[in-house]
Image (cartoon, rainbow, N blue to C red; front, side):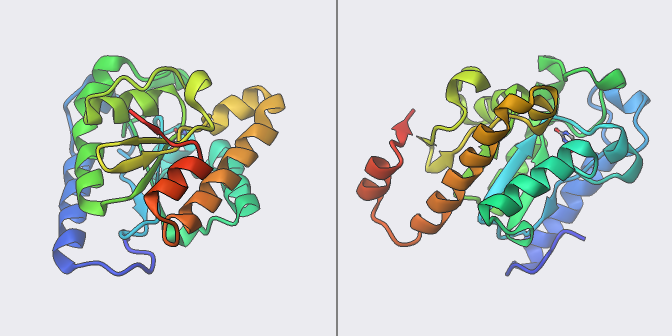
Length: 216
Ligand code: URA
């Protein structure tokens, strides 16, 4: 279930499987009372990119898989537009159980759930992380011990922290609410796609200049 074609060691896959078992039976916060399914991360276990969303919606809660609803369809289209192949990436969330009536997760819920994302980051070792939306930058910020600010201020930039590149992005649900942001959303992924390619061929100084990477 976790591998979609990447090279991986058996122990990493086993650990991701164990992590998913822990997520599936998690009772760290009250969200477990109302969930149908806790949602584990999904994708390539040697990902070029780790995308982090907010929390499962009703479709994800039903199916136990991330980004299979309306936000997921929009995300798929934007990735396709940018030439980012779905089988090269891993998709996860800040919180693994659906908050009721589509509310945003509380900071206490993000905090309690952040250990799972932290473990995924350690196991998957992505060089680029795309936190989508405010819950995702809060979660990634907690893990790295940095305040990344608000998504409206940092979306579209590339930041460098703790040996990782962060490319904060709007959450697709924000684009569904405000379609004026769609071009920006697609362009941000296009930039990430170029960066992904250049990461393998350019020296860090060149990358930092070309993409105005900000060290934080
Ligand atoms: N929105 C998210 O943030 N995550 C999902 O998995 C689905 C919708």
